[in-house]
Structures are given as structure tokens and as C-alpha cells.
Amino acid sequence: MTWVDLTKNWATSYKLLQSAFPYLEDDAMAFVKQDRSRFISYLAASHALTYQEAESSLEDYMARLDAPVEEDARATA
Image (cartoon, rainbow, N blue to C red; front, side, top):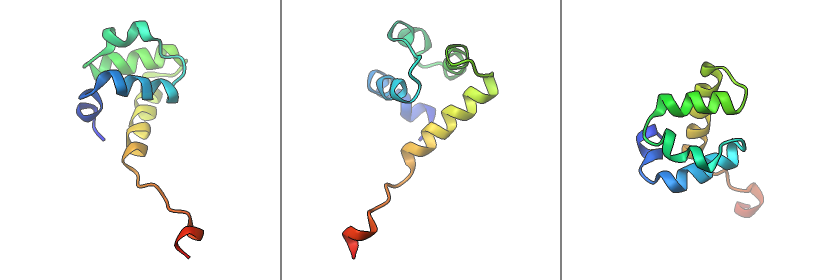
């Protein structure tokens, strides 16, 4: 998933981001909307991360959204 994909439905995406990054506040949603760099800066500040750590965390989060769900081996046996 890319930042563009994530921001297509920002309200829903932001709620999902809050589940992964619990210190994101609703009041900041409009402030960081559509600006990846601003969002990463806010993520870093709200979670006591460096900019690079926050950027890496966001990239990891978006990659997990693209990862296929593994099937339970017992269900296919």
C-alpha cells in the first residue's frame, strides 16, 4: 500500500492507523491529512520516535496491509 492509497479514504485509514499507533489523536486528523511528511513528524512526536523510526514504522504498517493473510494449515488439510 502506498501513502496515496492510504489517503484515499483518510477518515477510515486514520482510524486504522490509530489502532496501530494508539497515541494519534482525532484532533490531529485534519492537520496531517494528505501530507505524508507532516504525518510522519506527528507520528514521531506522539510516539517518542525519531523521524526515521516513524517513517520506518509507517512503511512497515503499510506493507502489512498488503501482506496476504496466511491460511490455517488445518483448514486446508
